[in-house]
Image 1 (tube, rainbow, N blue to C red):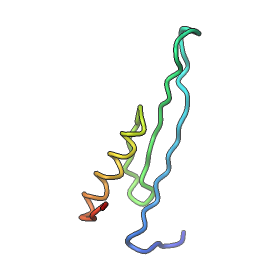
Image 2: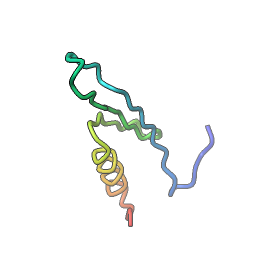
Image 3: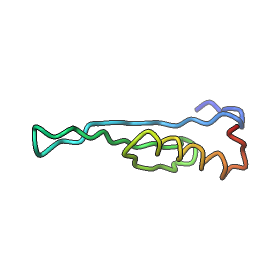
Length: 66
């Protein structure tokens, strides 16, 4: 695997629709985000959780997300 510069981080985001029991109900989107190098991951229910995961990760690495 190629090594990236320390300021580069790779995340994988998977999203899917949750099956619904009631056909009239809205389908819920769910997801999982993972930092490739460390394996840290989180299941998410909305895009704000994706943003929080990335920001928390960067801060834990003493990086300023700007």
